[in-house]
Amino acid sequence: MKNSKLKIVKIFSAFCVLHFAFLNGAIAQETQPSPAAPKSVNIPAVKERKLANGLTVSVIERRSLPIVTVRLLVSSGANVEEMRRAGLANLTASLLTKGTKTRSATQIAEELEFLGGSINTGAGWNNSVVSINIMSDKLEQAMAILSDVVLNPVFKQEEIDLLKSQTLDGLTYNLKQPGFLASYVATQYSFNEHPAGGTPESLGKITQADLVNFKNENYTAKNSVLIFAGDVSADKANALAQKYFGSLQESSPMPKMRAEPMGPPFVVGKALETGKKVQADSMVKRILVVDLPNSGQASVNYTRKTNSPRMFYLNTKRRFKEISGNAKTFWDYYPALVLNSVLGGGYSSRLNQEIRIKRGLSYGAGSSFAWRTDGSGFSTRTQTKNESAAEVADLVLAEVKKLTENSIAEAELTPRKSVLTGNFGRNLETTEGLAAAVGELYSFDLPASELVSYMKSVQAVTESQVRDFAKSNLPGGDLVIVGDSKIFMDDLKKRFPSTEIKVVSADKLNLDSESLR
Image 1: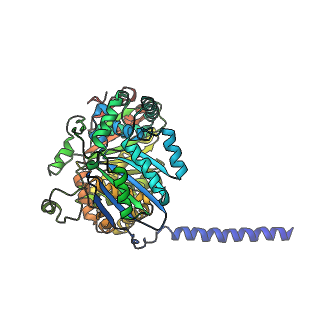
Image 2: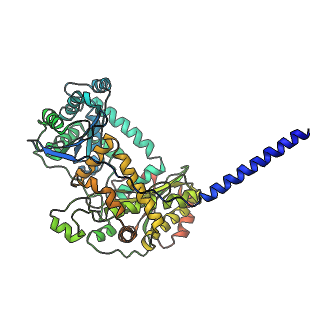
Image 3: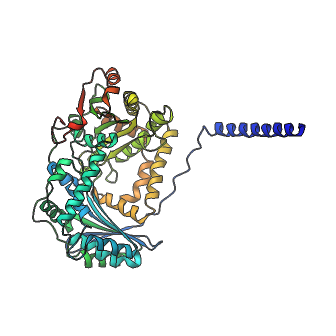
């Protein structure tokens, strides 16, 4: 009996020692180690040439693995749609693989599966994309399929009806989710755009003729770039491009459609575009509440149309130098990236630290930019219980305001830059990521050589540049809250007594209307 008691005492003592050691280790780790110096990324040269029809062919050779990504980038997306045709670019891209003059949708899928490859299509705001991933020894067979879906789609009515039905079903479900609904509304309310995926009204109106016209007007050689990344030589890539895309129509005989204005100009964004400094009376200019009764959570978002970060070269280097002082630097783009990393770019960002880690009010909070050449969109996002929606709105605005007023310690700034450069390096490790990165440069008329400058440009950003960007671009935005308004409205009015709160019922929401009703 004594031996048993002695054994228990020893075990307990050992446990206490281990527990104490664990606590000491945990306390010691409260001070995080400094991040290591950023690793260099080996970025292959981008080799470019033009075919006789005007198609740009861009090749990035990476021969370490027998894999190739081929990406056709069309410089037209939702940005050239009208509101009444919202979703047209995405439907067009999605239907390319649903049947051609010589292959059915099933045959396209089966042939690529047999080759061990995949094909993906889609459209966003700035462009449309068709891409394949394939083993390098099967590249030519895959190129035959890629060119067929781009050059010879038939847009069968039964495929159109099926895809529209599936898209509408997905949209109907998503419009009942607070987070999706908040972003959906902000496209019109804050950014004067329309949802790239379409609306229930616009999707129902799109016809076969609309799809054929969009494809013919936009999928042209001079409006496209064919990107090869991976285990392929420039000579072979150019030969394949000529063989399979040399017959791509040079340009459209018809003018492109252009997105119609969604409503009156956004006043604060307008002031920024003309170079005037915004003197906001408060961080938030407008508050919109979308009432979604019985929603399990509320989505709280701060949205703001910002001055364009000039992710493109202006017409002449002389004019660019007048603005930035350096023809190889994007005005405001890199400070904007670093700002976003500090505020809402990951688990250790300020928003997530304040809302999730310190207070447990959400599973996560973040922020992002939607890049445009004519004025980009900034937004924060988080979901919380309805009872804490107004409190979270206050916290978000407080964190945004700090960036406009306070300096950022180097101990915080350096790790946030490392997050950006680390993610950049990882993305370029795959042929798909490499092709996508080069495609982004073409989307904004940037030279492919800028890919090499990314890491150095991020590291060169100063905290004063971040603060200056924040002062000029973040104040005076919109607070968009979607949730069960009867639960948080009183608290919201108390916290924002001088700001009018506009309330729209989710079941009466209409983006075609200026009033949203």
